[in-house]
Amino acid sequence: MTQAAALPRSAPAAIPLTEVAPWAVFAGAVLLSLLYLVGMDQGATSLISGSVLHEFLHDGRHLLGFPCH
Image (cartoon, rainbow, N blue to C red; front, top):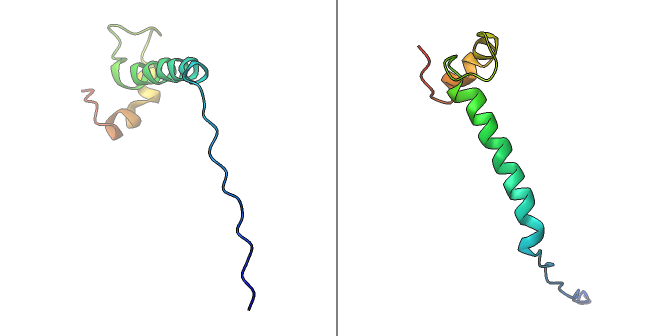
C-alpha cells in the first residue's frame, strides 16, 4: 500500500470588519422591520392602515408567541 500525498492546508481568508459592517447593519434593519410588521402591528401604530396586514400575518404572530387578542 502506498501513502497518499499530504495536501497543503490553506488558511481561511480574513474578511475585514469594514466589509462586513454595512451588510450587518442592513440585515439588522431588515430583521427589525420584519419584527415590527409581524409582532408590533396592532393597528394603533400601524404604518399600513386597515387590518389587512394584521390578518395576513395573524398565524405567524401566534407561532412566534406574540399576543394579539
